[in-house]
Length: 476
Image: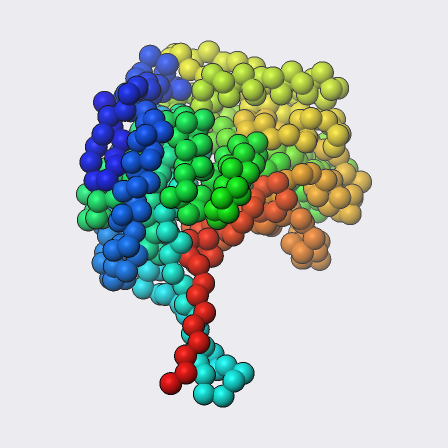
């Protein structure tokens, strides 16, 4: 039994959940404790007690702790990456890459601790000085999704601790293994009791308690729009600080002057790698008429060369869908697309492999229109659509015609169009001649509209959420 970590102790819950490998349904990864509301209250109370002393711990001590965490993750990146791939279904190279990124994030914030920034200003009144400083928010509840079970917890936990906050961490139910392994590393890094707490369990119980408890000063959530709205509504009742990342319906625009090989590579990597289970996936491929037919043909040929199999098997390009429920959702949207009149040009069928798993061939729809559900709603699977555009202006209008605004990409040889797209794409992140999925750990991450709410995540911009500003006036 893998237990919850509360106030410096490993504690069992009343129930347990079974963690199963989506590549091999006969492979049980482990049994993980399920916290109840009382344990969440215990975790929050312990974090509140620890905050007074942790918030004033010296920056060198905080830096050293975060550095130890990052160093251990990097030293164990292959082991942790294998656990991630076994648990979530990413291919092994992707799993190891994500573990590496998690370690780098902790190492980045180990250095960021030492770069505390403030301001000194002259008052408009003679003889008075003005100091602007930042202080930790307090106890933060961190609710993370299943698709990046090491990287997203890392980019929330590391800055929270770096800036002097105490943490109550609730991972997604589907990926308790990575959360537990990361928490085990944190438990041995030298943190005082109560500074970091792990509470595994369902969102309806654990997540709801975190959102409602008055002892939680701020909540950072990554997940679906519907759940994010509920978290925000509950937190708003008590005026808690909220940060939400909630997905996207990201466009990749391909103009007539695009390099065809670059366009196909961007589409395959952005739309289908990680089984399409990324909020930055380019699920809408908006293609100019002059290159449309050649692009669709080349993309279909590239999809035929992809290997869908066990995430741990050498040579696998795409692993399984994460679980049976997500697989049913993907199949439902594929059925919906054909029912709406779109042409299923490739894939979209269940696959049988040597081991029982949730295998789905990458699906490509053509002859779609912007109003179709498959172009409006986030599917979160290996499903992409092609929309034909008359030219750049039409393509830009289609790209912006969505309730989401996380990421957008363009493939073009035109500096003019690239510059215009960067300025006019209604999103938080833009990629030029690159896949929409794939960001650096030291830069801000986030979007607009229904994709994000609140300050950006990652990099130095993380301080906007995890700290609060204080202005002091001093007369000598």
